[in-house]
Amino acid sequence: MFGSGDAREGWERDRGDVTVWSRNCHWYDGGLSGLYGLVPAARPAKSALTEKDLSRWKLIAEFQARLAAVAGPTPAGTWADPRRELAQSDYLSLLLFGLFNPVVEAMRGLCAASHLRRVQEEICAPPVSLGSFSEAQAVVAPELLQKVFAELAAERRDALERVAAHDLRRSGAGSTGGSARSRRM
Image (spheres, rainbow, N blue to C red):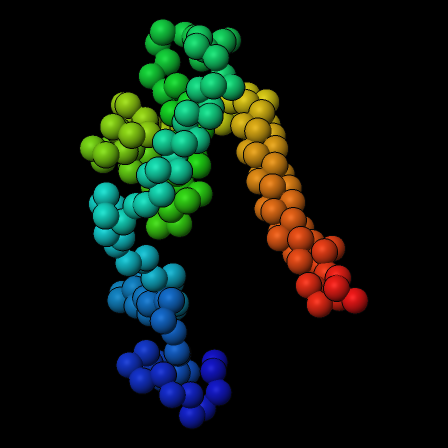
């Protein structure tokens, strides 16, 4: 299978004239059935997420404030249904939280994180089920995010212009007046 002399000690299984090297597979020997071969190894069990594993709480709070300013006081459409437990702002905040925390690898991880006390206090009030999260993907209004991102882009542009103007004044003040010696001449 792999070239001889491969230094992968401890991962070798000798089966007659074939030597199998693998870290991602296990050898399956079916006993009386006579079936044998390689099968994918089970993934190692992941440890449960804790609040210490997660970060960027302040960025989420700032995002929520901007989202509330853009969205308005009352939800519209399907988000106004009183039976809906997951609010649009909670969904978007949880989604952004997942992007900021790579330790949360997928939608299941986000839903699991929603059971943590601090996540419930700061990001989404009730724990989020897989079904609610999945449905929210289909009904979320991307226009809200466009407005928030446009606002952030405008702030960034203004900040860059202020910095550039400040740098220009600072560097231009010394060169426009010239030195004191050249003015006397």
